[in-house]
Image (tube, rainbow over all chains, first blue to last red; front, side, top):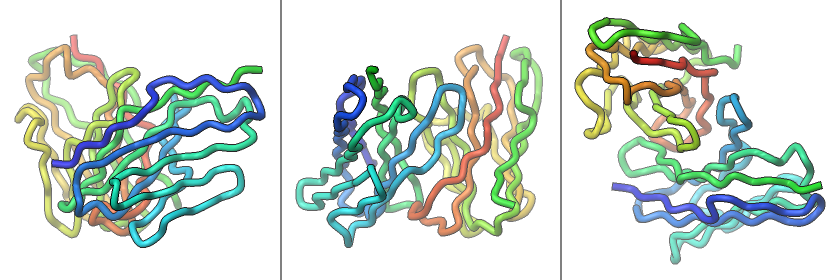
Length: 111
Length: 114
């Protein structure tokens, strides 16, 4: 079955700097790669997603890149702000209607 | 209505109890999911109901059983649970199904098994 690896597990960056979180997946049939943000005590919410026919997608300060050959995708957050502090999960679709999550990255934005 | 509604928000039950968690969406989404989330862990898929077909994560014990009365409702029946089953249970729906669309999560049902 699908396995999604996510690194790092914890990331601290100075406010205003950039943050990068990386994920790899194992299922060649995966074609959809969302990123979710979960603030403490709240539900996960989609922040950006990318499909396998696209290499990069950007939405304001957030961007995602996908390398299908390497089975690797990354989240980039620029000009980080205090409200970016949260847990971020990458995820990947499987060939059988499921979405599997990585273990998560706890992002701390330092003042 | 863009909400996924879960009830109850909190549930405490003994190991011999039978209870149910309920999930409802009125967005016309074709897929609904149950995830289990332990503290500081990712959501772990339990069940998917997509295009009128139920898929089960094989690692989920039989003391959890899903029920889909109609396309807007997905219940999770609980019986003879163990303390390690204490967790946040998240319901989600997706317009596209097939694991290829945004998941809209409910606020979750926090379950404590004594």
